[in-house]
Image (cartoon, rainbow, N blue to C red; front, side, top):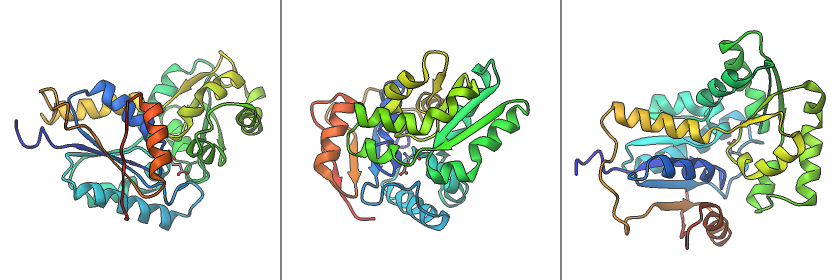
Length: 270
Ligand code: DGL
């Protein structure tokens, strides 16, 4: 096979959240191989400052670039909001972030033109979502809210139950009287709380995640550049997982979430 076609796609997040993107990528692009990096030792990124987030993102990207990837997916909204331009200027392969396609989708489906967006402190403070929505449609009202406790819940494997419901209510009660009809999950960890969020907001609110949009964008980009793998990957080749801490918990949760018999991550230092 052509050397470029067989190269893996690199994908990183601060922890488990990027698996929501990986899962969709693997469904949409079954012939591709992936190298996943979760910076679990330093999660959450969302409560850190700009310089730290950019530095961490560069370190993750460099690690994956050294694995000779053909494309980099920044499966972290916090890194996409603050570091995407820096990464694009420093990395030779195409770099895909989480934000634009999810916003396009949200604006397209919102009938009431009232969109909610939730994310980490850093993502919401960056206003990247708010500005991108406004750039597409000035008459959309945007309600943004950071939900800093959601990421630790997910990293602990707490996706439902009484505590989760209480925290969902704490953050989302402000949306109740705003009449939003679309909520963007502006953090790749949040789809793991989608049931609890959906239950609280009810059926009148459409929930938009970035994963499907990213998978389509990656597929389109690979096809356009004739870089799409075109033969089934070796069953034994598998995908590779690296994390910076907490191997056994990651393996356990990733296994359940991705639906595999086993996931075996290697611990690395960045
Ligand atoms: N999953 C990430 C995001 O999409 C990072 C969350 C965090 O580390 O705070 O923002």
